[in-house]
Length: 225
Ligand code: SF4
Ligand code: FES
Image (cartoon, rainbow, N blue to C red; front, side, top):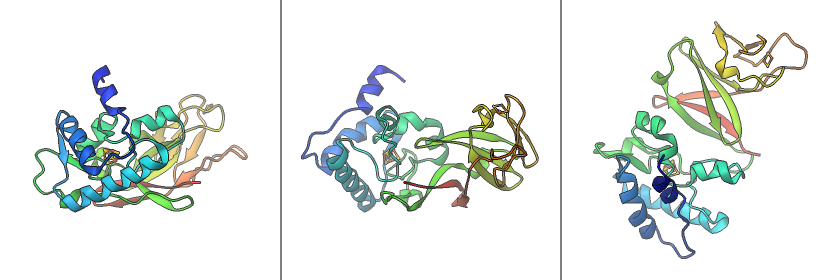
């Protein structure tokens, strides 16, 4: 990413910023990336109003669908518009996570509206991570949701999500080899059952996450604490 793009994304907004100010700033910026505001004006206003509410609390324009980690460097990636950081995923979905922005050639954005509620502590949130067809059978992909490092696995028509960190010496399980429902760590070969995170080694199971599929998207369910 160019320094110019980086600076634009990290622009701070002054107190008193309105939804119209956000629109005026964001529209030309996302246009350079091939996006425009959703065609559903009411939805756009609702999301932007939520972003402004969050800005009052945090000082930055975070969108309600993204999970803040508290780590300023990580959270800089989800300051709206976060499109430059997720170019591949958003291009595949034809929209950003929320659907606030859609690809410029999409005529009706009504179908592409996403989550707009700000996640609350203790409430599970379905986080879209890819399209169903993005992973082939037997493929594993590393994803991050907030601070969580997750290995997303496809076995047949089913998806599984488990912690990406091997309990032996923190090897990256998403770089491992999948054999049926067993994922072998690339470093020293510990095997994990992707269905429940279990391994033969005592007290070394990894945590798993529920995965749901909706509207052609794969979503990992996480709970904020
Ligand atoms: S997902 Fe969309 S609305 Fe949310 S921060 Fe990114 S660009 Fe903004
Ligand atoms: S780090 Fe995974 S087996 Fe050693």
